[in-house]
Image (cartoon, rainbow, N blue to C red; front, side, top):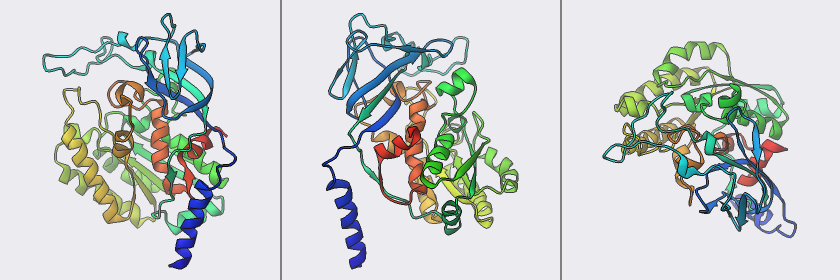
Length: 359
């Protein structure tokens, strides 16, 4: 008991007692939107800005100038009077008499995508953020694989979120290099010096029955880890949370029989202005997923809580590509940040964890 207390005291001293030399952390591509000359907050306080940019209709970067297109004050950024930065007041959503919108596909999409309005900010910060602790659920077998620098194979399966819908790479290049499974691979390899291979078989619009259909083929892949993300569509189209959890249990049984490590990924509160959304079921599904993971000693990435704790930002405007439920490229960084504790071998500040992606 005494040794454990000394260990945690050393951690506290290391993180809070060694601030004589400040460390800069790099944040790249944080997304947000700006309206007229109204300020919007960055997640961290910048000590210096590298570049501020958006994308044109074919995916080329448009760069903006400080004091010409935007102003920075403390932790916030705002447009100037004659700024070239897209004004989010021009973003179009058609609402009904109850102030709800009905989703409609192209060519008359409703709501309009955020992508033409998303501003990206690359900057450095001294803001370390919270300490992220390693999670105890990782198996001894996977710990050994990582320590030995074995090739790590991950199969990820889920909805359009995990498939990368409306990230910049997906939208402009039809690739998934900026999705959270790919970011996880980068983070794992930086920490352990391994080679991590991702097989992402996610599909837009899918529910948990898609996992049931692919269960045998995933097991045949013999992955070290399976990352599973369902619930965002299930809670809209199927309100029977008990059947949802029962079917999840069947899948988990099969993976655990094969000694495959499992990470379950929750989902954030999608836009409550959408007519189909049931926000009470969002919480119920996430609560049931969390209890399922606690019961099975499986790691749960609490995305609902992660996005819910973001202050002074409208997540549907700033952190989605579709004003509904598809995380922006930087939104996938937040997913990465929520899942990486499973793979950590020592405590780390959240800014340092994000910084791993750019070293």
